[in-house]
Length: 480
Image (cartoon, rainbow, N blue to C red; front, side, top):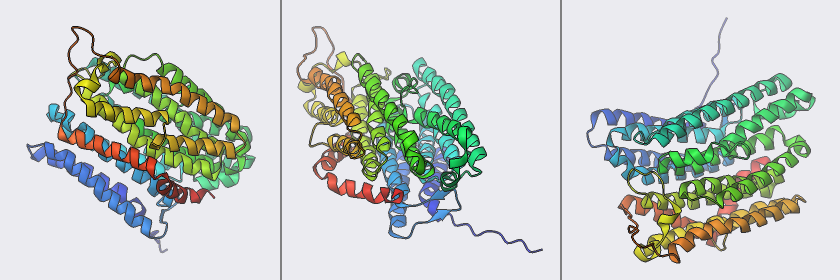
């Protein structure tokens, strides 16, 4: 008997393979080279080469790895967003890593492994692949969260994230098992074609998968871990996690609901709309009373997850492309805000209190102006990137005859303006109190460069949104 081995091409996974090789190379160089400052630049180069591979794949036909992964336009758009997040996050962490010299190799390699998990989630077309990618991402982030070993809050945040993340993974895996039992398939297309006869088992499976996705993107009421983890983790990790994990989670979320559940929008659309309302409202209300800048940004990220979910709940092409545009815009403005927080935090503190923002505009005018732009963009002030992100997802809700959802989103945006403007007011209209120390700001060139890049794209994406929206629309065409 002749056994024929199937022909398998790994080309669809080329960008991820490049990052995996880079991560292994970082670990190898870390053991033999004394000067560890080059590890970040080696990883940064790896993200650039991976980006070139993404561009190269975009020029040819759509490639697929069995029924597990695909390199379609949607996956490549997510790859682009995640690689941008990884590259800027490496720059944000550069100076913090110099202070923790003995940990640089592990930090950089784990960040690259997490990036591989994020990119794989965007390319996955099988629930097993999604789960494996989710675990690669999560395990790396659990360790990165506890990297500030000199602070007990960092270890506490890592443990809390690990325990709650394990529960979420269990929900996801059990949901995948129920979907397989009801449809007989694990690939998304097969699930979509055979799920109609699944009955109660199929409904339970979808509900459990929804819990897993909701935890990863921090949707209420599955957001409990977010404020403590963001506050306890090193700020560079919080920045990476707040954007990268959200982009990856929504990437898999959108593909699952648009492919596997495309024929049952009437059942899941209202549930997602209700989750969007709960998430954006809870996030904004909780952010109003925060005295920690990192906790404020954590609740802000929860609210933005609610805004992004509006595009998914709309269930139309504008909603899908609007969600992708939102993820791109959010990456730049949120990474920038966390970058400013890194500059403002005192050595060893790991956080910035709102009261310490007083007088920043007088002492550091350019930094205050940069932070103001990021705050205005997060609030949705035109003509910055955040405004058009909200415009597209809210417009998708109106197009889907869910004008009430768009109205709730606009009201929440107005509510969020209070705490975003509060940051600006403290910087520009409140002088430091008598006897209070002057705001100490470190301005290392690498960190300044990262902020300039984020600021540039927040403005550029806002001034020319049609260019980026066209890219998002091309990526979303796979959903019809």
